[in-house]
Length: 112
Image 1 (tube, rainbow, N blue to C red):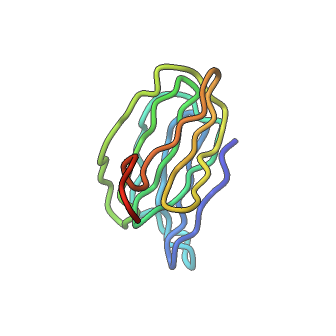
Image 2 (cartoon, rainbow, N blue to C red):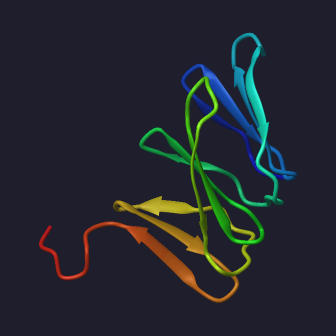
């Protein structure tokens, strides 16, 4: 079961069946609820106002962390996973069944 994520006054609940809800934390008012499909085991993370969660089939769903629903992207990893993305040093790491994916950061060979 994915862990919920609180950002300011909004609480994001990501169910293992792919149902995502945004709730006003103080009142419990549901701002929106959408079903993305897929099955989720890992928890969502927030980076720069975007929610990232990875389905067990390896699809990364990206939503805007807002009081209105906005699906920004769906990106396939090509393999299964049960992990929660980790974020450090400008990179996102996703452990999948065969690979550790490193996403973001400076391009190889670029000076930082």
